[in-house]
Amino acid sequence: MVQLEGQGVTRRIIAAIKQRIHGGEYRPGDRLPSSRALAIEWGVSRTTVTAAYAQLIAEGYLLNRPGARAVVARGLTAAPMSRADAPARARALSGFAARLLALPTPARFHTYRVADLRYGDLNGADFPMLAWRRALNRASLRRAERLRYSDPQGSIALREALQSYLWRSRGISCAPEQIVVVNGSQQGLDLCARLLLDPGDSFVMEDPGYVLARHAFIASGGVAIPAAVDREGIRAEGLPAARLAYVTPSHQYPLGSVLSAARRRTLLDWAAKAGAVIVEDDYDGEYRHGVAPIPPLQASAPDKVIYLGTVSKTLSPTLRLGYLVVRPDLGPVFAEAKRLTDRHTPLLEQEALAEFLSSGAYERHIRSIRRRNAERRAALLQALAEECGTRLTVTGADTGLHVVAWLNGVPAERETAVVEAARASGIGLYPIGPLYASGTERPAEAGFVIGYAAHDVDVIRRGVAGLAKVFAAIG
Image 1: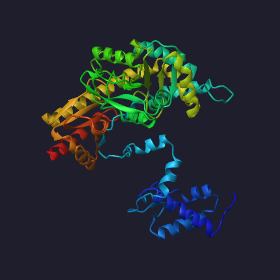
Image 2: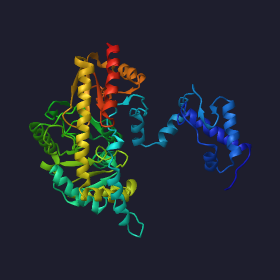
Image 3: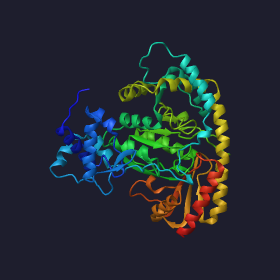
Image 4: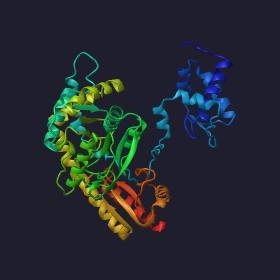
């Protein structure tokens, strides 16, 4: 390692850290890299880095904590960009980056002592550890001696297993060449955005709807056309022409409605007339509580609909495994876009999922977690009824892994205050307001999306008991 020692290097390290603090990259309370890590990064000794940190502590930029890494001091804020710096910063970033920076910043994750009612989290005890380990072991034994890059479209074994599973479970008829394996549904949305939209193109978005889908399309330059949702799903009548429509017809997120037969026909007719592609996100299609499975749009209009599936709500969101079903002519271009993005999804996990599907273990697991989540759902609904009574109106409980709770008589403007009060009580609560497009009409009362798949029944009950006290205090 070449050592670039001396006071000059120490000053450059100090200046670089200050620049990151003033630029907002390091925020108050953030931990800095260890002296060892920063020494390796700069190619200097730890003594040089320690001297730089000591000077920053003396100047009040950092706080020293015995036995722990230094943190950025409280009260420091990013310096406003000067007029001279603004053009240079603007030239340094693309239009995509500028659109991305203009989007709302997602909330940070927190740990709650009573219950975190975030939608999308699963219960770790539900993961089929032994069956998945067997699938991984079998996949490992089949690994070729030669280590090489894999097909960007996905393992052929997994695509064939998905082809069979989709026909059995969802009535989708497709060839393996139509399936593109992606790193979770979010990468599928990103590929759709970049391949189907040019800057300035319009896209239809359910309102309220999935925020990260809206952001993916906007970041690619799309212009959102909000479409209202009611108990029959998206209202497609009278929509202007657009290049793309994003929908969740089997279980609208977040309101929980199922797209009616009449609305399905209207949506498909609109797509045919507009020449639009429909992106169908079947994010939790495996969960039905006392209602028959809803056939996907793709099964009735495979030429107009791209189907997006995932195992994030059945196995684990940490696996980052999803898939697209596209028209035969779109398979090659989606595969090439995937290649340019990350070459391919990790192969071992793909082969393990193929084994899991082919052996029948996946569907046995689905039946098991469907029963467990039905019990959690029943416990949540019972607790909400007993603890909150007429204070709440609950909707969207027939399918999926969440409900929407509307706080009767409490205006929508108070959602933030309710959320903060819940968090102060150790409960993670999530408002529905951010899921509506800016400037569109929404219900007058405060609403909250409540997930229940991550917790045991007793935790759900404690969480609801705590919420009832919060709601009572709000008035």
